[in-house]
Length: 214
Image (cartoon, rainbow, N blue to C red; front, side, top):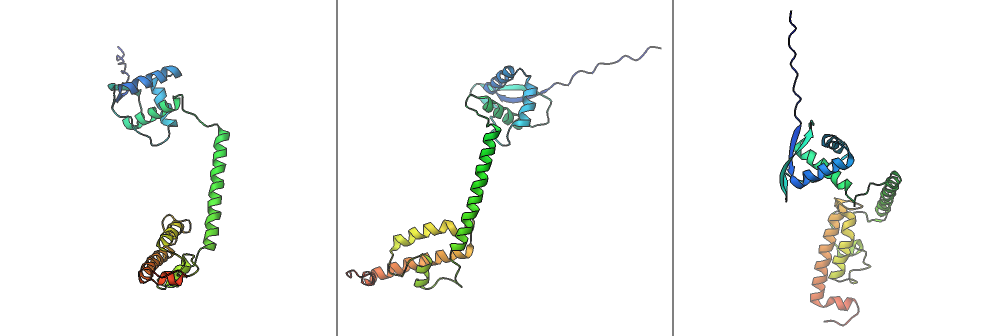
């Protein structure tokens, strides 16, 4: 009895990723320099490349090309991004930080974070407590802005002081984020600006400050 003839299965062809011609040449050059086949380079790049990055695209100034990358489930764009990162790291200007440098940077970041928390805590203790309701009295608005009375500032000083205080209390980005305080700062600024403009127009401003009336 004759045994059934075995049929040799043909190897599955690898994937070809569309890319720019110059990009393909650079990848082939890098693979040759590393003594590795392109599929091995692709596998390593996919493992080590940082997330994100720009896709170099399907073409470059030298035209379009196809790059054989072997078998991988990654998308074409992901492969191009990973290889672009590998090319960037292989460039003469790239520098991979030693572990000791990384640890120093991490320690510096941790120290800065601690200092920011300490500063925020100090500002929280020093910052004004919101008054009850809206700011309706000029003397309260002046005190809120740190002025000793309602006659010792002009409009430029009011606006400058507001620009100094607003980043501290802004409800979204402030160090001592507080929507109520921010609202009262806005009320105080508007009240003080109206106050300055009204008394300047009446001539009372210079009289209260001890100067000649205009």
